[in-house]
Image: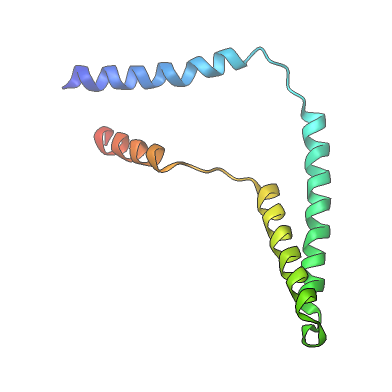
Amino acid sequence: MKKLTLCIITTCLLFTTIPTQTKAGTPTTTAKATTNKVNEAANANALLSRLNEIREMDKSNLSSPEKKALRTEVFSIRKHLKDIGGGVYISAGALIVILILLIILL
């Protein structure tokens, strides 16, 4: 049992260190990434201000097509903001594997 645990831990360590070694030689471009994030932040602020304008509008005197256009605009703005936000997503399979490994190792 101890040999099996040791082999599993060694395999996991090897698989985690191999990709970092292969990526170590690639140059990084931090200047482009920071300017891109600044542009995205400015774009996100503009989209948020547009959402606030739509929220504060008096929609009672708008016609049905105008309301529909506003709804589609709000939907597209929210989708775009969600795309800008990014985030880390873990698939269900990966989550199950992580939980199983934690249960086994602990």
